[in-house]
Image 1 (cartoon, one colour):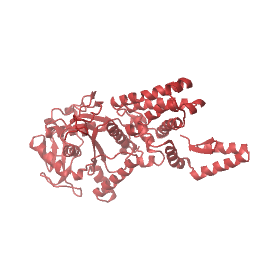
Image 2: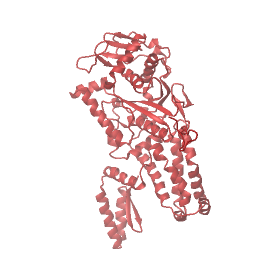
Image 3: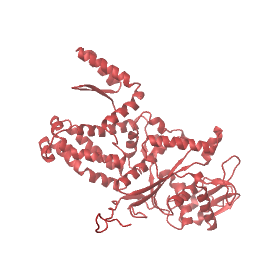
Image 4: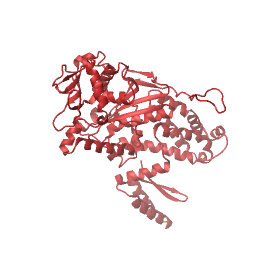
Length: 506
């Protein structure tokens, strides 16, 4: 059906989304994004193997792609976002056996916990969340095609992918197949690099029927089959952590392009890893994980989002448990402070005249506010550079906070700061930041940080009431003592004409 104007006239087509550029791991350059279908983006991201809780290393990839989807939709792209669950796997089977429960029950419990934590983080749920156990028929069908085409071979109830049958193998990871060895056990495979598509059933393990006997899928085939089944033979963007480039994504390409006779993904987007001291990645096997559930007991989810987005998505991100989130929370507080002090400024009349009267700091706020959107969007449209985009936001926030130190600005700076406040409001729909008000942010900080400080709201309010009483008695020494005690405990007291308020220091 054609779009038409009311009452007739020529068709009216919605404007095309603005172009953007993205780094492609396979071509190793930043290139302009060209969708398979105009205005549409199909995005598949490799998800969790659900045998344990999610930690902040996992959450980086989830937050990167959550924010990427938000931004594309903010810019007018129609995004179909898929992220899978691996709900049958060696690790799941091993963990379930140790706990004496069926593997499917363990996987389902951790999927429920995954949704609990990602919902608490404020992540949007993907449009599609396929599971391996729900995609067995498409997986078997793709393996059957690969066997028929000579790209795979059965052996002792298992099926192996023949890496030598795919000349382009190694192009994504820039490795030579002759130097590679898959992690799958040697039994039945012809060459060291060959990997399992179907694993013959072992006693006590989950199994499904197939042309090669009962068994279950290998790890890599699941994503190839899911992409084809749910999104088609060629997708726009395939995403995941940098640690998945080899072997997982390399194997996906080999499977999909051999079966489909078409390009698998136009762009490969990989996020850098969270690194601990010494450069090691956060990993359950290394015992250095910090679970998301525990972090959210002490810090607002927006602080974790800002922590991830302050760094370019492709760069490694160091994790220091003592400083990472306290510093991010402080940065977030400065953004909210700028919104708060800017919103209190009054004044009418032309912004240019007010800025000229108030001086250089006001002129800077006006200039930065009016140019912010252009610079902010340009940074995000060039390889999704959230670090650079947030740099513009912090520059603007510093200018607003500096202007607020001028007494006259609070009465005359309203029109000067208005474009800047409009600019900062872009952070909500575009990046998922500054989604609340300064007041709701302050209350959330109280709720999450007070237990970490060994305090309660009731105790702080009681001390504040005692201080108010001391001030009314003109017992200034006691009032100062109580203020110093609160300050030492991490509580900032703010005296105003109508009384006192307090906040947790960040």
